[in-house]
Length: 135
Ligand SMILES: [Cu+2]
Image 1: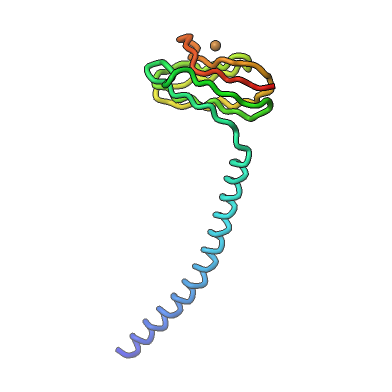
Image 2: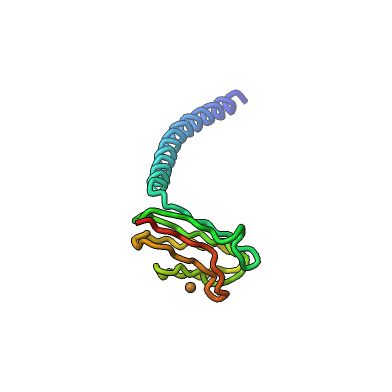
């Protein structure tokens, strides 16, 4: 009886030691991974594109045509959430992307051309945004 208890105690002790050692190295590598992920996210946010957000309800822009002014050479993203399926078309830059009903699309572009540009629901011919690029 006593012998069994000793063996059990010794086994538990060695498992605990091994467990401790491996836990330490595991949490060290987890910390490294977390730091790397955070760094990557920060780098992405540092670019900070200007978002022009439009929500389309019943085929029309919520609150009217979204008007936004950006500076030339800004990185801009037109973000459109729509409850109808259509093609989002940004004139001048001639960028287009299909949006599904209930979907959201992101149309990134660099504002290299000064002027005033319409974005519309292409098949409906409905204007949803007006983006002014300052020279
Ligand atoms: Cu168009």
